Length: 80
Image 1 (tube, rainbow, N blue to C red):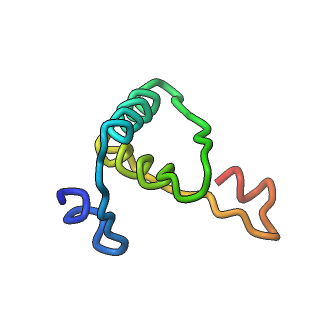
Image 2 (image 1 turned 120 degrees about the vertical axis):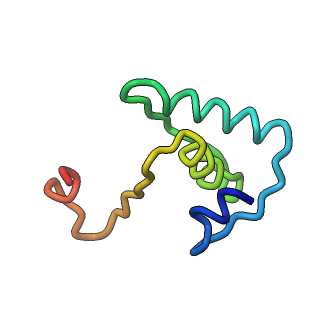
């Protein structure tokens, strides 16, 4: 509810957090808190990778941005 009030106005998330999802949020949060922490999240479509990552970034008070790859995506765009 707090996430939806702060960030989710444009795209609210109505999630049911079961034990496994909470464990994944904790893992992602721990990784993001590390210096230069990064992770490659794998799973089938619709498994919640993006939603859990968004929520973990919100919990850690991180700024979130998404890289959108297009046909003309090159080195200069990567450097931004």
